[in-house]
Length: 260
Image (cartoon, rainbow, N blue to C red):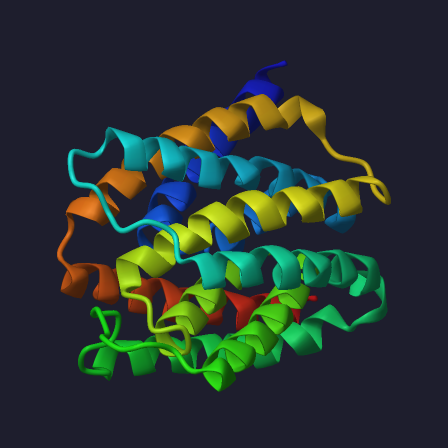
């Protein structure tokens, strides 16, 4: 009984902190939350499914935080929203189905290196995430859709990082500002994509329902507070946080790849 109380207390604290940071940076909660579930004794598939169910509430908490904030951010981009929905969701299902056929350690190593490179690039890139004027071309939208499909595959097959990559695509290809990109990521990647992934994986592997209430409460509180901070913080500060989380996430991915 005491051991279970300690486990759930650790889960609450870590989940709260991870989702607070993720809601400010656009992703990365799973790099902390998912390995913790494995360390606490869950098999890989059960940990992945349990994590994805809990992270759905990251997006819900972000939407609650958006409503609480006295500052109103920009609304959703229709084209980007349609791509996230109709291209991203099928990719998540496909990624969840093929997860057992892909050597996870190789994918994690490559993605870790790419994530670190992206974090360094965004930190030094002048004007990254600031509002960009002008219409997007059809080619740019098609390129973005192809990249979102790849990010969706990644979201369905591995523990986390999809939010960071989706944010990069929305800033670099779709030309959304950084704060708007993070909010799109919270709504579509954290909520919708993880719900689809959780349903798909849950149909193939067990989910540890006993730990979910604590994780859900921590996720809602952390993401709600984090989104309020995101809206209030200057873009430069958000950029530094995003870059830092990306570099840290890449290092954790590489570490996990050697332990796989």
